[in-house]
Amino acid sequence: MSLLGSPRERAHDYLYNLEAMSGKEAKRLWRQSIREAWNNKCAYCNNPPIDTRSLTVDHVKPKSKGGEDRTSNCVPACRSCNHSKGSMEWTSWFRDQAFYSIEAELRIKNWVQTGVVNSIEYEDIMAS
Image (cartoon, rainbow, N blue to C red):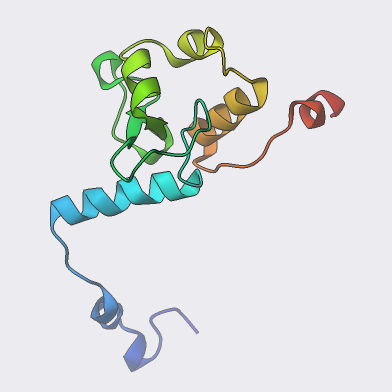
């Protein structure tokens, strides 16, 4: 039987549970989902935020350099990292930081490619 086979499974029946929201609310929820995917920590330095407003969303590839407002191009960043990185290319900036780790770089690269955060360990990659 097809997905839309029975009378109750018509396309308009699926719209029943959808909620309408403003663009502002949609953007807030989008940003929140990015922060939650990273356990509410900065993707670069891995520090938790000082307060709810100090964890920003950074464009890995800056918008000024053609980066898009896509989930996979955005990571949570503390205000310090976001300000320090500015519109620089992220890998060269990141590798110059005292808190740099190959594991964090690989997590960010994986996020950019797949939109998923996982705990990639450098040793695991080198072993395979």
